[in-house]
Image 1 (cartoon, rainbow, N blue to C red):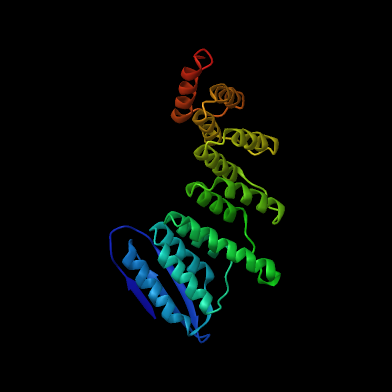
Image 2: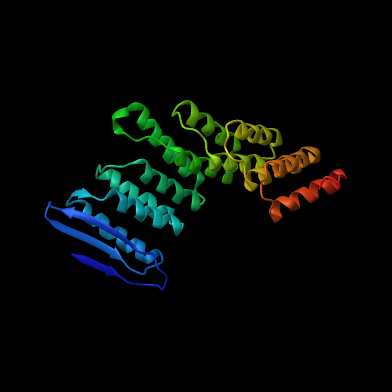
Amino acid sequence: LCWFLAAGSCCSNFCVHLKANHRTDVTIVGVGVAGHIMIMNCAQKIRRGFSGCAQYNLQSFTSSITQHGKLRQWRAALDLLHQIRQQSLPQDVRLLNATIVACTRGRQWDRALALASAAFHLQAQDDTAGLRPDTFTFNCLIRACSEGHQWQQSLTFLEEMRGRWGLQPNQVTYNLLLKSCELSEHWEKALCLLEEMMRNVVPADRISFTSAMGACERRHRWSEALSLLKIAHQQEVGLDAVLLSAAVNAGGRSRQWQIV
């Protein structure tokens, strides 16, 4: 059985495959469809198929939630996750990650954090569930904290990922943390994170230095900001317009034009 949904002009192709009664292949296909109507129609068909499913394609459901996230349809993403859980269907960390991203893009930071906290709590009680966060999970949560102006919680997640789960932060993790420090004007913590980044041989890029310099500038730490420019130059970090603008601003404020 095959449904073809056609609406809109942009391409957003995806398929969902279900097997019912171990015999009949049920395929839902969306071709060249962009928009809320396409995803909601497909999601409704998926839900109606839950009751008769002996197996289901987890990757396809994850893709469907990802599509919801791209359209900032966080309610639809949470609803689909709820339907999956109601039917006691298998889940994995990628499904959770996609839902967290959907909530974050919908500016529902508290919902994203609550969703992850509940899942991790279940994992702590039942290790047989196999649901473990990965580095991408924590990157999503740290982004939610940064955008939700919860910088202290973002640092808590850094310790959580390393201490409890044995995960190592990558460049994206540090850049998100540095951005959080910039927005919260915690320049000293930003410098510590940048130093830790280099110590752990995690490459610092233009985003890293721009955020650290921004944190310094917000607290009028001009000398520290210019010192970061020197380090960026020594490490051959490519200078873009944003980083150079920050450097010029710091040089002017500190009256150290010659350094810039």
